[in-house]
Image (cartoon, rainbow, N blue to C red; front, side, top):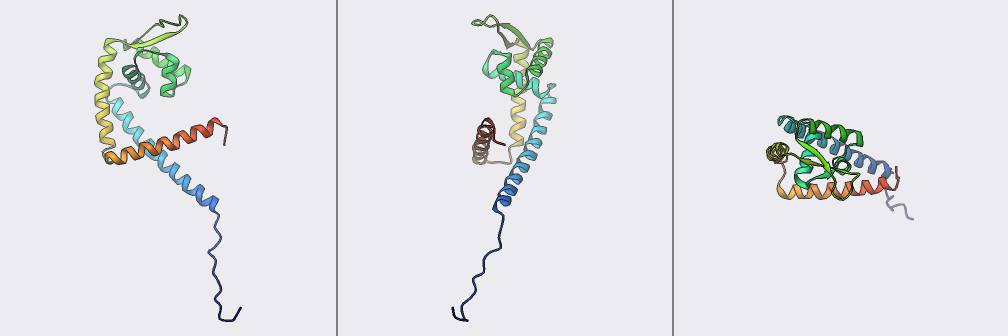
Length: 167
């Protein structure tokens, strides 16, 4: 090489693994904080209707899916077996739901809305839907669809990863 050849400057070595982790950590932190803020809006909306979030979720499932076994409701709204039983007991004592025999499985019981429960959740659901519209009004319809698509993509991948036992 001649003395006039330029020395090639290499970019400083970077630990790409740490940069990727930092970006993923930042995305997780933003997601966590946003989910918490949206959840607080939902809790406020539902509590203004005189319901707790679990009670609202149970009534909403029954409104849209019809009578369901207790364990199915629990899985759907992410409550443990003990928590879902307590919540159903609480709603039953308020005469919002009732347990009935399962027509095909004599060992199982179905939970269904009473007329009082149906009136309450129909009204509560309408108001909650309006409150959530307000919470998400910062996004355009296209942005909402993109958010849903991306959250599903991450959620499904994370669930699949967890099911494989990947830490």
